[in-house]
Length: 160
Image (cartoon, rainbow, N blue to C red; front, side):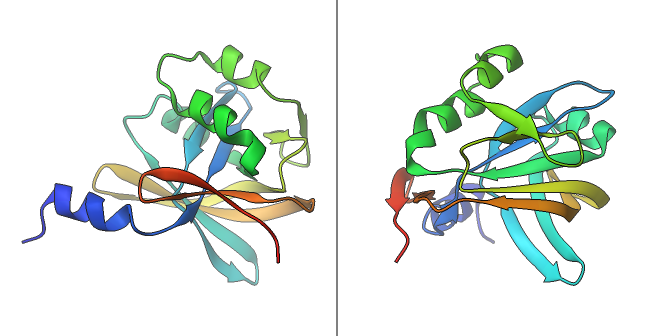
């Protein structure tokens, strides 16, 4: 049997993009730092986003039915930490960046290398998390280095 500690250690060795997942709508405006984002298919363009159900943004994302995956650049390390902190209010989080919207109304970080504006097409609860299946409705891309998380540390990945 694999322990939770052993699994977490193994997953720390899986390098991943650092993302801000944001939402806005009838349930409110929220955002959180998420590393569990993955491409599902390109027809239709779909990603999955995993969010812990204990996170205070989880129910707001679920109830709004929309989200934006803001893939971060190296310069956004402090912003990612603010969105990950349970002591930072939603208002303080959003005050640290410049935002607009694309199609869904979810906040898109203006200087993010990539923003994936999505409608939530489905969800599945597994263990402590919900897997949100998200159809990408609009993409905005800019050339920039990306912020990745590997071995419990941030790293900057430059384009080739």
